[in-house]
Image (cartoon, rainbow, N blue to C red; front, top):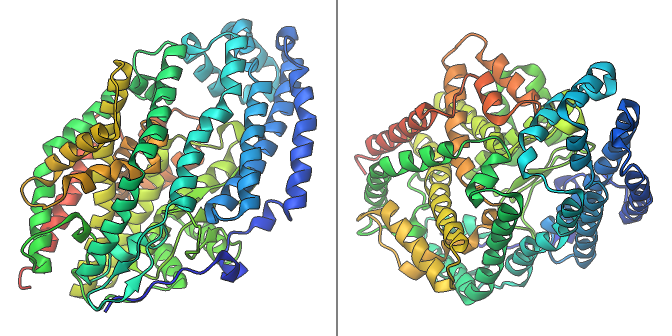
Length: 604
C-alpha cells in the first residue's frame, strides 16, 4: 500500500526542524539594516578606483574594505536565497531575493576596477609588494590565478558593464525557479486502489520510490506532463542562459563555451572529453543493470519510472537521528574532530532544514557564507535514500566548514569540480560502514538500490546531460536556431543510447528530462558530478584500504579550499584526474554493485 503523502505549509513545521535563520540575521529588520550598511559601503569601495597603484599599503587597505563588503553582500544574499528556496510562496522572501540579487550586482560593479588595475600594476611589482607587506602575502594564489586569466580580462569599463549585467543575467535562473517551484501545478497521482496523492517538487522523488507501480506511473506522467505543458517557456529561459554563456565566451575571447567554463578553474578540456568517452565505453554496464532490475521486479518491461522502484521489502524506517548516527559511524576514519563537528551541526546548531513543506524547492543543497553555518536544504522522508542525501550534503557542509575554518575568505570557497568529491566521499564511506554493519539480505539489497540511485544520477543522468548541454552550446555557437522539440529530440536520442534495448519509454516524456534540471543554468556543471564521484570513490578506496596517511591527506585537501587549483587539490589527496584511472575505478565499483544485486536477487 502506498502511503499518502501530505505536504504541510511551512508555518506548520516546528522551528527545531528548520535552518537556523536567526543565526544569520535576527529578523527581516536586521536584514534590512544590513542592506543599508552595504549600500553605504559602496562609495568607499569605489573611492579606491584609480588608486591601487599608489603602493602596497593602499592596496592592502582596499582589499580589507572590499573583503568586508563582499562578506556582508554574500550574507545578505544567502539569507534571502535560502528563505525563498525553502518557501517559494513566501512573497516577502521573494522580494528580498530580488533585492539581494541587485545588491550583489551593485557590489560587483563597484569593485569591477579591481582586476584591471591589478593587471596594470604588473605581476613583478605585485610580487615585490607581497614580499614586503604581510597583509598582501596571502593573495599569492589569487594573483597567480589572476595573471593566468589575464588574456581574458577586459578593460575597466567593459568589466564594469559585465558586473552590472550580472543581476539581469541571473534573473533567468530565478524565472525558471519561480515557474517550476511556485507557479507550476501537478495533477495528483493515483495508486492502484484509486487513492490520490499530491505531486509536488518535494514529493516527486518519494512517489517514484513507492512499490505501487500505478502511483509511480501516474506521478511520472503528471510531472513530465507539467513540464511538457511549459516546454516553450522553459526552452526560452534555457536558451537565454546558453546565449549568455556564449556572449561571455565571446566577450572574453575564448574559443568555446566549454573552454571558457573549464578555464575558470584551470581544468583542461580533455578532462571533460575523457569522462564522456569513458562513460560511453561503459554503457553496457547500464544495459545489464536495466535487465537485472526488470527481472528483480518481476515485470515484463521496465520504464523510466521503475528505476527507483524498491526491490527490497520491509526496509527499516530511518529517522533523522538514526541517519546522523549512521553517517557519524561511517565518517569515523576521518577522526573525532570531524565527527563531533558534524553531529553538533545536525543536532544542535540546526544546519539542516529537514522536512518537506509547500513551496520548498526540489532536491537538496548545502549553502552558506564565510560568516554563517554551512546550511542544508532537503526534504527528509525517513528512507535510506534520504539518509544518503543527508550524507551527501553533509560532505559539502563539512568541506565548507573546514575550508572556512582554515582559510581566509578569499580561499574559503571551492570549485564545483572539487565540491562533488566531498559529498560523494561521505556517501561511499557511510555505505561501506553499513555494508559491514548489517548483513541482512533485504537491507543489503536496499543499500545497493540506494547506491544505484546515486550512481544513476551521477554516472548516467549527469553524463547524459553533459552531452546534451555541450551539443546545445555548440549549436548556439554556430548560430543554429533551436526549438523545444529540437531539445526534446536531442535529449531522447541521448537517453536511447543509455537505455539500449532493455528500457521501454515514451520519447517525448524522456526527452523533456533536460527541462527538469536547474543544474543546466550553471554552464558545464553537470559533468563535474561524474568526475566528483570518481575522485570520491578513489579517495575512499585509499582510506578504507588502510593506506598510511590517506585520511590525513584527504582532510588537508578539504581544508585547502581554493588555495590550490582543483586538480592540484585532488593530487594532494592522491587522485590524478588528468588520467582515466579514477573514472575507470569507479565504474568498477558500479559493476561490482550490479553483479552483487544480480546474485542477491537470483532466487526472486
